[in-house]
Image (cartoon, rainbow, N blue to C red; front, side):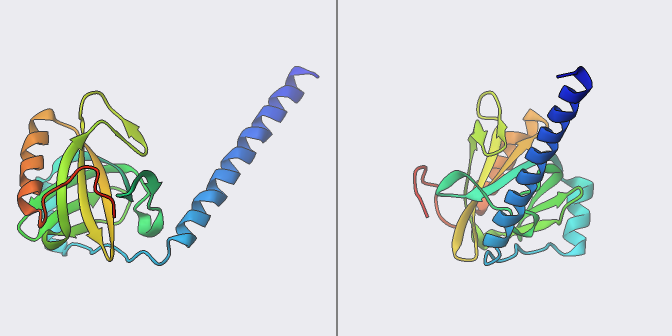
Length: 172
């Protein structure tokens, strides 16, 4: 086989793989259509988060029972840059290129640090992980805090909002 033909075959295989991944992701989002949409913050809270929030990378939201089971519905599967602000009303995430979300304080179940979640592995316990209720389902949102100085403060603030103590190993 000539070199140009081999390159063409490789390009076609890569495009086919990407196409199949896209179809799989869309299927996952359709299967999760029954998952309720998360609350949206008020424009005032979103503006405060954009201005005053800590810089984070939104990694993923997964089912609490399975840290690899991403929630794709309502844009929750879209990773990206974000700003996180913890207020008495709850946790506000202002996401760049995706829908902002509010985790109401009453829905926060707990927070902790971990090193691995779907879509990200970091040294130490570099991820801030928040367990919260999305309708009847308990989900887990993982965030990579940009500045280490902010990590412990944000963890303490989110834990202060928690309605139930975090119990590692609990499944819902």
